[in-house]
Image (cartoon, rainbow, N blue to C red; front, top):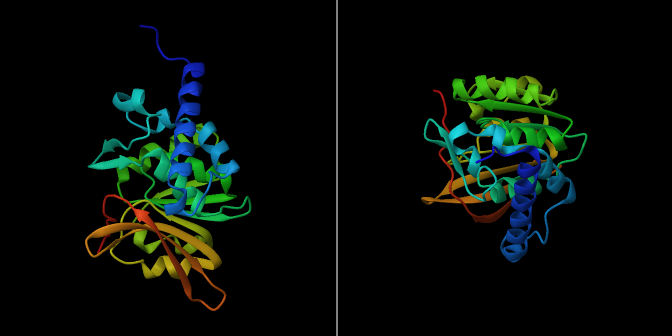
Length: 225
């Protein structure tokens, strides 16, 4: 069989985005979003997801499912990644913080939408792959370092948007502190044994407006004590 060409992969990518848009439509009442934002759609159409997964699962990269990437971790289902991105309401001037780089796919999506992205990954091997891959693909605005994501990246704070790609039992205080006024956090919270995708906005008075979106399933947020 012939190898897949870039043209083939582009077709698969369009199909993936079509499926994401169908899910947005079907779940519009639950998620409070009628359709995928156009800029987010363009980012998912552009970023080559197959380059951000291990080679053995690359043929499945554009299916709407999570995929294993090693160390008992997965790359998120494309619909969930798109929903989390959409909920952040990212502006081109925003400074973004990502907790959980993985192999860099979501980082690349954020880099397409935000001015600067800082991403923290606790697995050193992931960061060693993601950082050069992002730079090879031209994402000079994406910065990756190894560390405890629950502590954020205080030297670069404040952030306009924060995406956490792992389930926390409670919202890490450091992330709240590093969030700008008017900023948004999207993360899975493990409440009473079940995970809920949550959107949090920091108001001018410092209060947090919390909106629960839908049940999800993520690996737990790892911390270093």
